[in-house]
Image (cartoon, helix red, strand yellow):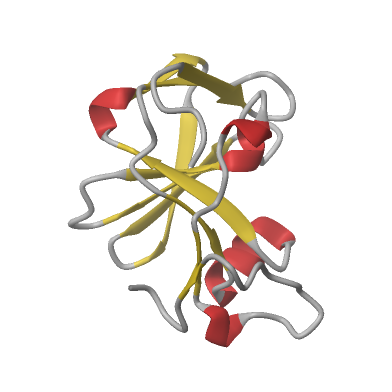
Length: 134
């Protein structure tokens, strides 16, 4: 997964929202689901997880949209950058790896929702791979 003890920092495209994650990510993976494709505007999105107490918005405010019952996606209300994902009953917050100041600090360990993968979207077959969410 990459960086295990450092503080990870990131934010949105316009700089209105900044965040920090302290400690090791709880997971990392590429999501190919249709909801992420539509929400992010790409064939795949790489997420990493953090416990709520690890995640701190240090500048600005995240805007939330409930995209389906119990599912909230967080983004910058000014520029629209996708930042977070949280599901009802989840113990963790999903954070877009591409919103990190150094996106290479987190390495995906799995692919999920491969049954939604677009045929033109390559994927790393050496990772843990799941047709749906494990």
